[in-house]
Image (tube, rainbow, N blue to C red):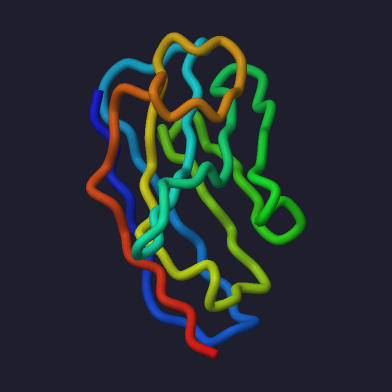
Length: 124
């Protein structure tokens, strides 16, 4: 199974962007799709995740009041709506898939399929 992100770009502080992640292949209700990001000089950071079956969600502390994750299982697509963007949100955003997760989680080591990443740049 492969995943591919889209929707990155440049925006001013306070603006919004919506990222999309499309998966190919067979995905069951046990799957979890997540978003991570890596800013220059920083460790990879968990952003959000959603379970394929129940739609349960989880968010990183730095984004939980501003970002929203959702899914369209029929189209095998997960969205990350990002509002109230700040320069600290500037990073490469990655979509990832854990086919056997069953429950939503933020452990990057368990995600086995990763996209190439999409750049998000927020200017002050």
